[in-house]
Length: 405
Image (cartoon, rainbow, N blue to C red; front, side):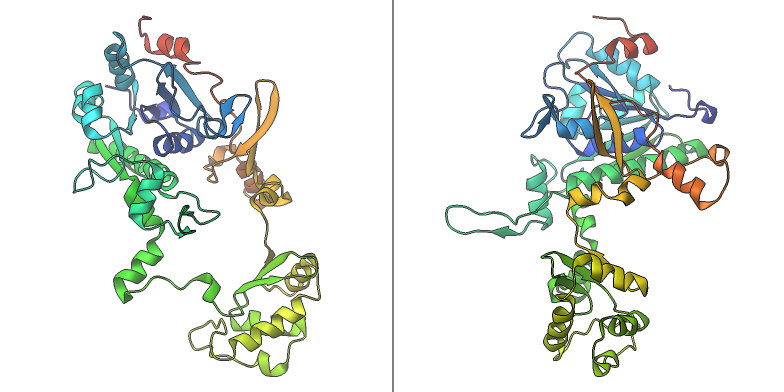
């Protein structure tokens, strides 16, 4: 059984999972201070070390998801597998498993087997569709699960049908973040004397949960949430003179009045609207007319001019950026959004986890400048991505006193 004394500081995590959900949980846990040991297949790794996009021969997903973790390579068919599992589980506070329950039992890493080694462990099982129910034994990859969750819209007909341009799977990422949240809640419960905890997340439920607004609307009123494209003219996207776009959202009365004054819109339009609910996006029979007037005025200015003008009078407005522009922005630099590191002699940056947890004792003062600086430096001290499968094998075996094969 592991040493769970709170003064040890860092939770110890063993991750037997592969691909995105479990490694996402480990990425978050490592970022928030956990010592994570990743168990990989000696030949294939965790399934993320290859792919269509690579950097120095490594799959770029691996370069993000394995930041901060240690890697040990063990073949489940080898003679040392049982001993490695026993030592790792005995050392751990948390065990993460991404296999279907039957496969986990075959490997000796199901909850019952793990409890027989460490009766105070937090055990996290990530499944495709759940622990029970008619879908629980289905094979699952991200696109399958998103399809079953209703999150995929398609385009095309005949010979080729594809998800709409810009589609990104949601279930796998959300499941990993949900698992990390559940694990920290379980660790707290364990430290309060409630013993071993079982954490479960299904990727399918995570995908449904991500779309909670549509699920809520369908459940209560029988229709999905309105599309953003159907929102009124006061909550929309407009083209600017330089061929770019801006998003404006003056749907509260004080914003709307300042918006109209700044753009020089007609007084009759400024006074229009039912504000009884607190907001008014301008939907109604006169919406096309209102949109045309706003469009004509904004099209006279560049994106920067519109944003500067409206920001000066404290009206919500923003340029429509690409992901690349957002990551290269001054705000990203100020916030530490992209984490710089050295990898095989080259400098690169990867997205950081957006959460910071800072001890009061580490803050020189409580002013906003100090808090912002601490948030910006939140990833300092994390290990570099594993440069090869099993890179930390000798180190882990020495730490845990595991005999070498």
